[in-house]
Image 1 (cartoon, rainbow, N blue to C red):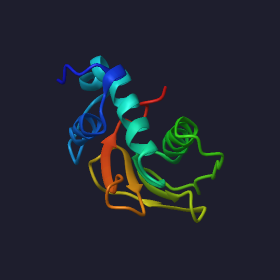
Image 2: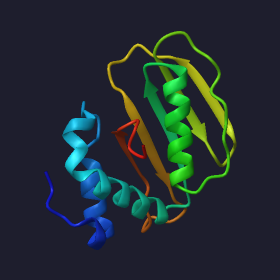
Image 3: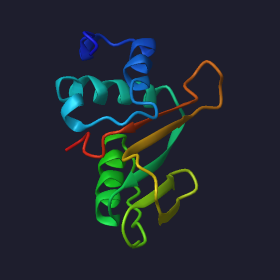
Length: 138
């Protein structure tokens, strides 16, 4: 685990914190000591992008909807789309810029939130991070 302090993260160190989650099966227990640092890192990289697109892999529509609302709230979005009900595990994609929210059944093993940072300029953040914990903001 990283020994960086969440209060003094740079943009590059924030990216390193978030890259630990790229396509890995992480549990909340593994994240617990660094939860504040991960939140701060995500806020920092989000601040260096124009907007974010969210992808959520969850066990249920309710779990996906709760995670989406938590992430949107934490990152300052006012939209609160409702995820269309699906049977069993679900993948949800939400683009705040277009307002489009798509849900479909999901057969993969990953669970968590993908946050894709979108920027008009190369020097800002254009990168996808995750699968971040569904309950990161709880």
